[in-house]
Each structure stands twice: as structure tokens, then as C-alpha cells.
Length: 481
Image (cartoon, rainbow, N blue to C red):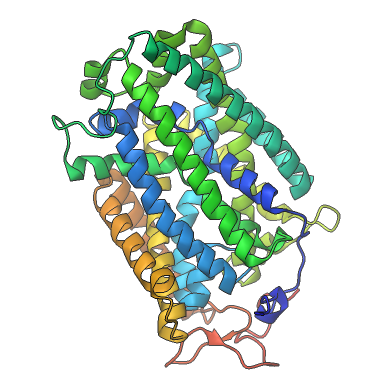
């Protein structure tokens, strides 16, 4: 029987409250991904994929499945908060971990602002008396209060929100299938999966780079590693299970929606700049009431449920990097009563508010931030796959070639192709952010504060190797109170 690695073995104290069950983790991942996420970006994916929305989501699920497998392997090796930052840092080397954490900050720090912005715009369309910026403030304050009260409160609320989203999805699916049975289909039954008139691999993978926005969030489960009362195997399984369930739901709902899109030709030509394609389709299928129901559900799901867990995950990333002295140390402060990283939670709220309010002044705000979020996540996932191979195959000589070599390499190849086919704007801004990270890393070395991780010693030959029993980290105090 293999002994589970403990947090203390890596030079850290257990400060966060371990209270999350397998079900809590599964619900957390589903809420982060949002079971009805395609409602909000359906039009964009439809145009980008040439109408093959279901195919884009199917490929996205496969790509993310390999990533989920890599997350599960690294969560077993390093059961602590920090996600890709921790796994790349400990699996490869501390500087690589810093850069991976820096890149994924584009995802974690900016995604709450994106969610708030989309939800606020939707709510303002129904209650115009409160402007977009007003709704944004309401969402930020409400989520911050809930997250401050502790992870158990967050877990309870997310379960309620998940049930509500699944009910709305079930209503849409029933109405949609009935509409198809009544002869309202606007295209062939298999067209959402393959359309010979529009198909090309570059087209589909370009659409995948947008569709994966719906999948981002299963990886957030890894941020809860220090608050999970489950063993590391079940933590990894919760990520795979959440991804699989969400993927099936995404494919099913987009398949039905693509068949019912009433303005198919216009959507392929001009896209969906207003973001209302799904709601227009819902009205065509079932009437105005279904359009309103799906739009309001999207606003609540993105602005409250999804952003609630996004803020929680982001605060854990900042906490993990801060206790290793790779971000300001005040971000590592734990509230003694609620056992949450309070300063990190408040900083995430402040960033979301400032960025969100700024983006309300731009017509391209949603497009701009979406590209950054996706590029940051995909690039960080590339580092994750490399860390699996280096840690298990190179260092430990693992012979489990499927989980530790083949699956990571396949996942890397698929994601690299997705990144290459992403929008030029996303690539440009992403590269700029990465270069800034390199500059920050260079300054850290120049000032004698090179990245180090508790429980590791760096040598010129074997960077980031485990310290001998009884020895401390290179920094001497990293990860200690």
C-alpha cells in the first residue's frame, strides 16, 4: 500500500480547512465550467467552426481529457494548491513553475472579470435601470462576501446553483427535441458534427480555441487540493469526471441548437457580435419565454456561480505563489476564523472590479479578454504535459508509458495546434505577457530572489530536486509562517 504524500513533506503547514468531499469537488468543477456555458458563446463558435459546433466541442473535450489525465497524475505527486505553478515548479524546476504560474494568471486573474462583464451586460438588457457597471459591482461584492465566509459556504451555494442550471438545460433540451420532431430543423442531422461544404482542420481547430473557454475550470479543482478531505486519486478522478460530464452536456446542447439556428446563413457570414444567437434560437424553438429563461440563466450562471468559484480558485493560486515568495507575502495571509486566503480573495475582487469597469468602456472588451484567458490557459497546459514526462519518466523512470508519456505527448500536440490556430490578437498579447514574465524572472535573479520552492534544493545539474530528509528548502523559510 502506497503512503499518500503529506503537505508537511513539502515544507508547508496545513493552514486551509480540509472539508471538501468528492461530490463537492465534482460540483465545484462543473460549476466552474458552467453546464450551460455554450449559451453565451454559441454564435461565435458556430461561425468559427462553419456550423460544426458539436465537432468543435468534441475535439475540445478530447484535448482537455488528456490535460485532465496529466492534472490527475501531478495531483497525486504534489497534493497542494497552486495547480500548474506547483506542478511545473516541482516537476521540472522552480523557474519554469514561476513562468507557468505567470502565464496561467492570464486565465485565473482575468476570467472573473470576463464572467462579471458578460453577466452584467445580460442583466442590464433586462433591467436597464441599473447600468452594466452597476451590475458588475453587485456581482463582485456578493461573490467576495460568500468566498470570505469560507469554502464550505461556497460549496453549499454552488450545489444549489448547479441544480438550477441543470433544470434550465433540461427544459431547453426537451423543448428543442420537440421542436426538431415538429420539423423545425434548419440543417441536416449530422451537420453540427461534419459539414463537407465548410470543413477544414484549421477552421475547426480555430473554433476549438474559442470553445475551450467552456471547459476551463475543471483544472480549478486542483486548486482545492489542500481543502479536500479525499485522497489524491479521488481528487484526480473528480477532475476527469467533471470534464467528461460537462463535455457530454456541451455536445448535446450545441448539437440541438445548431440544428435549430434560424439565421444560419447570416450567422456564418456576420457572426454574433451581440452575443444573442442562442437566445434567438431558443425563441424560434419554444417562444419568447425560453429566450428570456436561457438569457437570465446565463447571466446568473456566469456572473454568480461561475465567477464565485473562479474567484476562489484564483485566490488559491496567488496564495500558493505568495507563500513561496514569488508574489508579495501579504497574499499568503490566512483568515484565522474562516481559514481562507483573505488578502488574495480581496485582491482578486479588486482586480476583477477595475478590469471589468474598464472593459465596460470598450466595444471589444469581451473579445479582448476572452483571447487572453484562453491563450494563457492553453500555454500553461503545455507546461503541465511536459512536467508529467519530466517528473515521472525522466526522473523516476516510470514504465507506465500511457499515463506518463503517450497521453501527455498527445495532449501537448493537440493543444499546440490549438494555440497555433488561435487569433493573432490573442497570440500577440499572450507573447507580450510571457515576455513580461521573463523580465520579472530576470529581475528576481538579478536581485538575489530567484524562485525557490519549500522542500526542494536547486543544483546546477538537477534543478528542483527533493531535499534530503531533515533539510530545509534553499530559501530557508519558503512556505513557513
